[in-house]
Length: 320
Image (cartoon, rainbow, N blue to C red; front, top):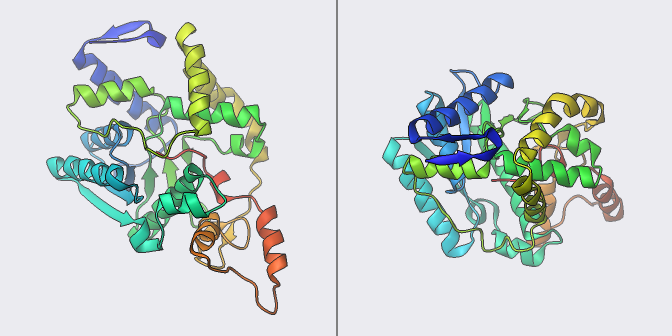
């Protein structure tokens, strides 16, 4: 049914599905991602990766609740929510929905036009903020995301090309809970985008095939294209690069993770400066002011915000 060149193997449906589940189980065990009695929140977008992961975790018996974040991207967001809801309904699973505009006052297209960050950057930081906050408020033990091998290899490539050592140090498939952050895990990091698409197809999972209409020019896509070109002529490059980093490179960079977190003065969520990236982005989009006043001049606030490490760098740079 499917040939996986990096494994030098071809699989029938039964054994491919078994291999896929085994890879997820191996990732969970290797990085102690979750326990059988943990309450798991999975970030779902309606795409193949998050729905495939949700399907596997449900099949393995975990207590998993989906969280969908409405980004306000017109018909694309409407269809994405409908697909995620249909998946949950068909399996008797729970899906929570947060609407960015309703709950926080802006949508992603508006943020891209008014803010100083790119559309993809503000989308990513909004997702990370909402997922972490929803998990904390809902009493969940773990947040799981559908990042696959292609995502992780492309992120590592980008961070390495720019020698962003602190970001490299934090690129782990499992980040422990700390200072107001729920544990975050990526159980699909051993599986490629092709493999997650094949799993979804063979399991009969309907998912949103179309790319986000705002993704044009995304730097992450260029890194994916570059590493895919190498993978085409040298199968296994992506897995050797990223899995090799986890085994041999990650321990070498561990000392670079020096970020110290404390509560954002506006919302209470963890950050490295006075205000978190989400509150700064939201204030800029909505035309609101952060800080200032007689004791702390606006100029000082601006300097502090410019110098701090963004929370987007604390976990990872891609969201799915």
